[in-house]
Length: 425
View (cartoon, rainbow, N blue to C red):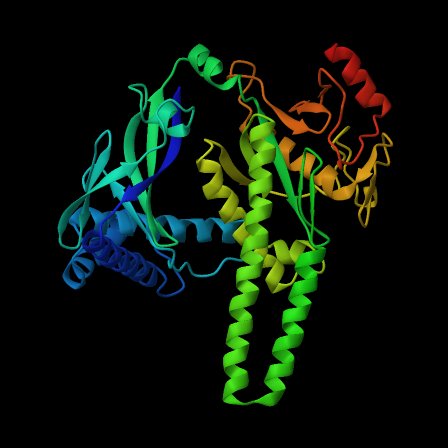
């Protein structure tokens, strides 16, 4: 069985090499967007990589200084994005034309050479070498598990530029027998489900809530300040509006970083290898009261959790959220009347709890059922709860000590849950 892991590594890059990487990023993004523009012409959207290669390669090579393989990687990135949009259209979802602005470059072994402690990267002007900034080798980190071992092979990487620093997200793979894979994964056999909302920005299946009250308060305050300044109409007022916008963005980023750190801590403390979010596409249509600001916050939060989780060797996924707010996480009965605002009460089995907490558990269960491959598919997995775990069949396993988490909603065990608990014993 093939196992893949991504390991982020900070790079030690000098000022001259950093300037070359910046130019390479700019031209790589230009190339990817050029291919998207070409694929987007007319009613028919071109998704074939072979066709896009034939129709765009010469133009991109002529108008950029990119290594030939970087041109192909930019084409692949563009084609994958267009294919994703077309796939969403086929599912009846809205999706607009892709545009790349995040500073990244995709590397493979044809345009990068990966060594134990440094990397050689192709740029718009030859190659540069950058040393890895690695943690202590004695610590148990993704670096020690997947880089400092002969089991995993580096297959490629994606270069990221963030907060003035350069990071290389190394992609690794290993071939493992099923019993070896089970031994490698049984130490962390659970998934953390995360539900997003307006009143509660984020809720985990462990029962931890992050209120949206502070976010809503400051969003309203900044809107009032902008409205007051707009009435003045002066140049000074316009400059103040821009200043208010920067302060607003900075405050919300700090808030979202705190929440992201909390979600990572929940996953790490509960031994989770996966954090499952509801899919963000179309979230404004699904949730009432969601503003543009909330949509921005949800996307930022997901991005923060995704890159922070990589440092802990935790995967972050999105799943289809259909009926997760209406489905009973205990018995599986689905009905619109199960939910009334923030209250959830199953009409079939009588399970009661906070509706968003119930949805977070369902998101975790949906991920498990999507990835379950049968009895011989590897180690058993479950959704981490504040009182035990819930497996993909909906069976409940209580913890060794039923202590519960402070501040978490109390589970109200139903008859079905009690029977599952008895079977687990």
